[in-house]
Image 1: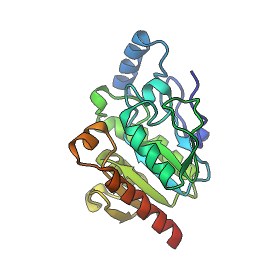
Image 2: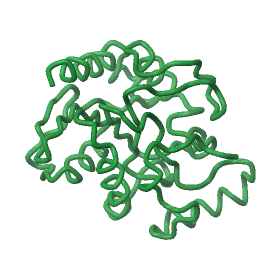
Image 3: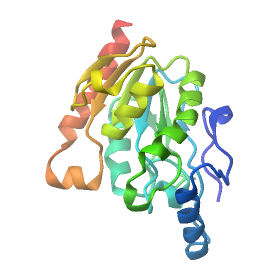
Length: 220
């Protein structure tokens, strides 16, 4: 199975990245159990000329870890890609597989952690280790002056990568931060099944985030 082409190939870890022992062990378990899954670091997805960078958490077990493309094949991806299409940031048809016709235009998705963590909970050390790839990705996406962080982990990783101290940039849905490197960060609750089912995040709340991102783009 091949993933979608990365917009930042120079920033991607190797297929058998060895840096996080716990994640490597979990990866090997899943490779033995699911031979036809991707089961490797998940590459970024989107437009190399993106003006908007979407910073996610980590691959989902039955989503990106299975298919090899961010937010593809799980519940969270439906809301994300529907919203991106509504705001002109995606085109084609999202069919929950890598070889569908979905393409991102003007945005790119870059996860804080490239590999699937057990229970979807990366350790702080794993987030920090993987931040080297996030840093390379943001350096390559020179036009991405606006960032959206999906959840608090992504928020912290984005703030650190852009030169800030997370304690000085409080996470909150629709909170907006001017980062030391000149980028603007907008926070969003993660579009996970849990947040959607509990009402913590509604489609309207999620749309507000991307509407604001477009407003910032128009002012730049």
